Length: 397
Image (cartoon, rainbow, N blue to C red; front, side):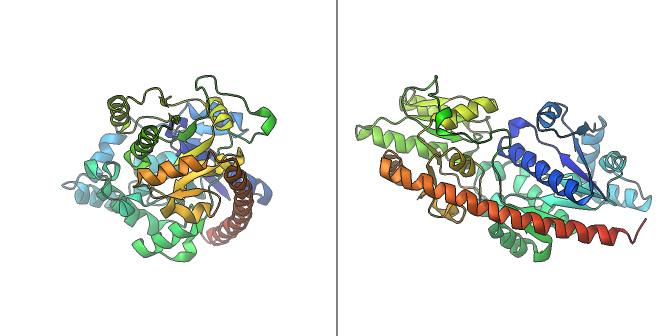
């Protein structure tokens, strides 16, 4: 059986790209142990060097220049029925399916949420979905503007029932998808996130002070989406300053609608000496920041799980996290109300308490081991699904 894994994101996508790399290494291990063929394809040529650094072979597929216009016609409400009827009657394939068919896959594995399955008529696929933030928090602009909410709803309602299997980040999300989209629970597989394979782990002896930030600082690796809640962190730091406490924070990540708003808040409240925005940084810089920070701070709204807590635990750092996402972290983090600057400020004070930090670090190690066990079980279940598909696929040519 040949599995073709489709990678659409680039490294600038942040956590989505990180998890896609972990998924590739995971399916590579499963395929090699069980006699399956794996081919990784990507739409982005700049991904090749990153994949080669992890000993992953990959080829680039290129979309014809007219493809975006073609998809616009399909998805335009006034044209969609006519275009679809025309193509189905003539048994035509969409351009992307013709391209992927050349790889001769038995099944496609989409490593991140994708729109491509909407255009598949013949090829079976495994889908990946990490959140339904548009349903949990529809008020945020990233899922409200430009028809994103409706686009996601339409896509998921059409894609998820057609998937042979959908990979989620947790049992929490699997249950939510089953409820929202009336899916068969047996076709949902919870696979816990893993740390970015490019990050690795570190020992205490490797820790170095970060040259660009003097003294201890909190670290938040997140794209500048409104739901990442940077403003609430700044409000907490501002409140602590009014109490005579000076706390520093470092933000890294690309601008996704909201960096200008964050910068304006910093300037208005004269927080420049306490806040550094480094933008998108290379993986070596992320390592140094994890090594030298006091704690990870992540009062995000979207979940149900996120990658940075795993990374912070692997570097022996305490975590401040949102309380509605407590199912991910258990007692291995200080959980706070993401709507409350005061709750976040209190948590920041706690991570300067050495006794509390020692407990959190130990709990973090235990939590990592717990997720390693969950991941091993999930990988075994993944293999069972692949075997089942392989057996069934022998019934057609």
